Image (cartoon, rainbow, N blue to C red; front, top):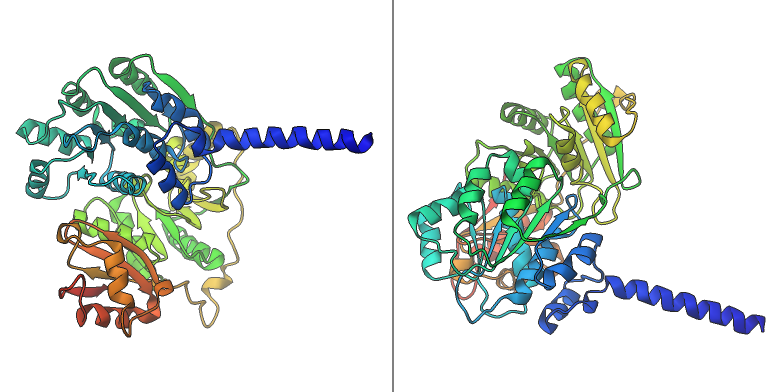
Length: 486
């Protein structure tokens, strides 16, 4: 009897566990078979909380307000919703996704394309500032199904009448709080006015300030509100705060932290563009593999540096908050706040780049006496008492020989051909691994843009890979390529 009772208990627990699992399984949703098969091939095994709670109303056609932090899986949530209802044979703009920055727009467009791999002849077009408008006009003339863009450039195309939103049935406002922070409210109102009112609207935001509530009231109809807790907590991100006396000690403390923790990937946040360049130059002089990212760079240079950091061709990225959102890094070991962020929410966005997807992260913040008021505000916001601690031993800066900084494991090759030349990642892999080529496992991330492509290879094989491309063929023709170095 005891055995039977135990077996019945085990059976009940198993049924309950299976029910729990099925609730998070993508197959429990009314998704097209092609989308489900592609999700499986991409390794999407279970829904994140924000996907689990937002996808059912999204697929039911409801307006949705979803609040969740960076890394919560929101992009896949709205992407699956708009792909499910897309009519591929109708070559008109049916979905519009607005993002605050070019970096985030590019990341979102890439994710939509990945999720849409099983849908033939779909066209996803990015419309962002910082690049010539002419090629965008040419692409629009050939049509598109999904537009992902920044408010300013989308508004420009509407003004020029090179873009029509007359048949848009899905509008997504991604990082809506950030768009308001950047002053895009008027542009958003202008754009929304040109979209049919009978549409589905999805608003995704990390925070829900008064401005977001007002926007939702004007552009949405009876929205479903979804709010999930941050995916980051004390268990996933270890935070350390260090008090420094002056800017000289601040610079020394940064080098000390990088030598002590030895991250393979680290982002250092500064509050000004001038400091970004100065810190990056100083770290490079000290032997670190480092890149700088700030608003004074040309868009092509910004794209290139983001690609190189994301593929492991540099270990340190020094940046302003332009990189706090939309930075597409799978696993970031360390975030350093060279200065504290101006507001607590921005601090959370900064450190949210590490400790993602269940991994462990590390965030270190430097502050001087004049920044104590920001520290107090941050503690109140997080609901914790922040206590500063001693820096690691300074002997790391005085040892002979000085410890060698962590070096990048990959190098990046730039190829002067891209999507417009019908180049695909598989073509690049084939060109590199052909006769007398390098091994497939020695190839890293590949990023294909309109007129250029980037491929990462192991550092020791950079020259061999370059010679293979320069003296070989890519899709049956010769291409120009070069190694990107600092």
